[in-house]
Amino acid sequence: MTREIEVTIFGVNAPAGGCGCGSGSNSACCGPAKSLKDEAADLEKVLQEKSGPGLRTKFVDVFSQEMSGFPEIGALLQEGKVRLPLVAINGQPRFHGGISRRMIAGAVEQLLKDVG
Image 1 (cartoon, rainbow, N blue to C red):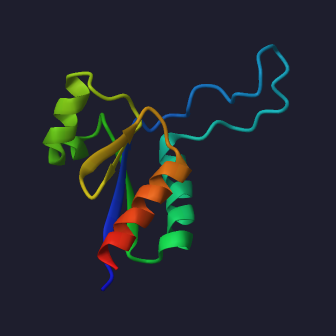
Image 2: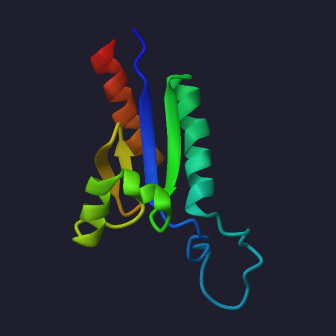
Image 3: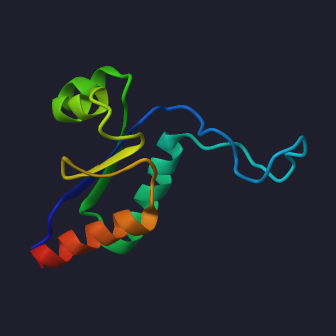
C-alpha cells in the first residue's frame, strides 16, 4: 500500500539573506541566493528520489492568499511559536527555522515505514 505524503514549506518567496561564504567585499565565491521556493523545489527532487512518486512538496508564501487554507499554521506564526521556514508533513508542523534535508527525509522515511 502506497501512502501519499505531502511536505509543505511555509516561508517568504524572497532570496535567502546572504550566501554564507564569509564577510567582506569579495563576494566572487557566492552564487545567486536561492529563494525558499527554489529550496523547496530542490528538496522535492531529493525526496522523490528517495521516496518515489507518492510524495508531493508544496511551497506556501505566508503573505499570500493561500494561507487562508492553513488557519492553524497562521495562528502558530501570529503567536510567534515558530520561525520561518516552517515545514509541515501531512499538515502537521514538524520543523521550523530552517530546511534540513536530512531531518525531513528521515521523517518521511519513518512515515513510509509505518505504512509499509
